[in-house]
Image (tube, rainbow, N blue to C red):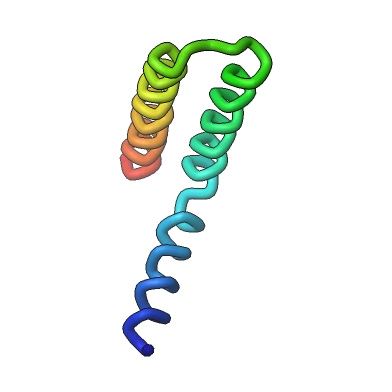
Length: 70
């Protein structure tokens, strides 16, 4: 049971470590979900939006961390 608690704690700390990255990703997923519900966009288009959005969020987080380390 100790290993499960350790894994859960590590997963939680990964998400809390960069709160802006976590919130940006959650906001992107919520936005795509709303696009599907409200505008009835197709799955392929929403998947593309989600993919590109995740890449942009990751690039922003990487650039921010590189700038912080300089």
